[in-house]
Image (cartoon, rainbow, N blue to C red; front, top):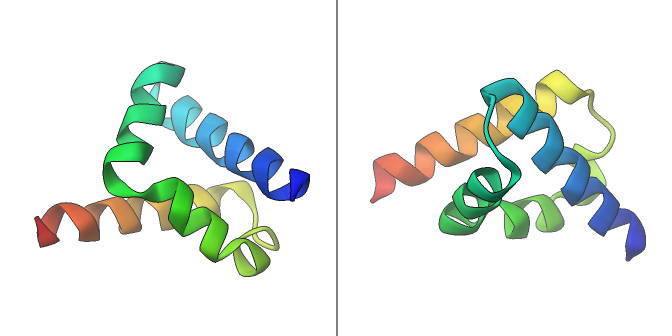
Length: 69
């Protein structure tokens, strides 16, 4: 379980860095769109990919959620 928490923090940090966002804003965005649940659900697969793929995947996930709203 601690590995998943560390991975979620890693994903948040990488996304934050790429988009030049604050930690608070990134966390709120992830919360709004259910990104942390998504990362937890697909941890087994996602943690095997590199930084860029993970951030791109999160971007796709958020975009799809925005379109669905």
